[in-house]
Length: 356
Image 1 (spheres, one colour):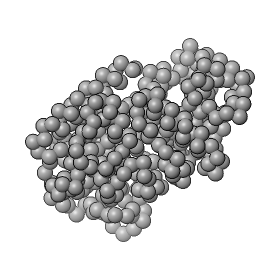
Image 2: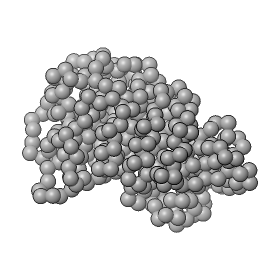
Image 3: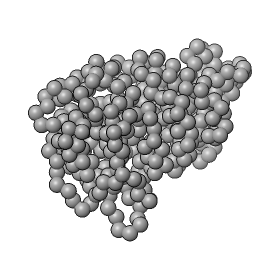
Image 4: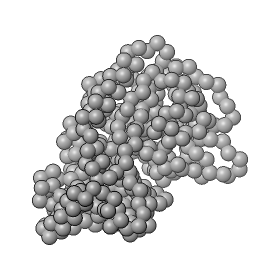
């Protein structure tokens, strides 16, 4: 990859600007400020490509992380049997933890700034590659138009969302009749058997973090991935503005948890877990999901971002998939990385096709 020339439309900063114009949760000041301190991903550097604006106007920001280790990225590498994709650190334009469901359009100035800075780091051998994760088709088009064709395009995952209007009953009536009846039956039986679901503020959720961690780690183990979260990271998530935690309990036992964030008129659920041996008796996942949908309606929210994986279930329950692409930019002539990226794409695409 070759660096482009600088234009006056962007600048690189080691700190967030005073006012950020977010396009989604994951490029908001609240999220970016917290994620810069996380230790689950090991950073060499944390910087921000910032669009220039007159005066004190809010500015869009694209985070640029030089990452030595990321469990999330390693999960993809291990799953596709390419680990490691490259021998040195990787520059990520946005953390791979951030499922950029609304990070579609990316301004040309931000793309150019991130690409130029990453190319400089690679030329100085401070990093091996630039990876731009979790782009929609629109975001891919912006990057390719401005930065050129990458060495590889990898379909990393599918993420799901639903639009809300009216109330829960209106939502349920959009589902297939068999699915709707099954949901009603499962929720009723779970309640009769003592399952209770609550939405907790950060201070209320804090005492449950250790048990919640066991559930998120159990979900990673279930999918043969490394543990994607630890206790400090979950505690950090509670400090993000808008944090809300859905908790499912029965007989004094925590059976399921979703970590979410209110942002504008939507709520984003980033991670969670359930006790798999509770699914048969309590339909824990279904109970959590539909309680959250009911809560979102009651609180005037208009969209729920549900995140990745569990494809067949989510589509059966009326959620809409969006493709999340990863673009891999490598030094010119690096055919080995191009070959590994192509293999990652084939492997993950086949996995998603067989799981839907």
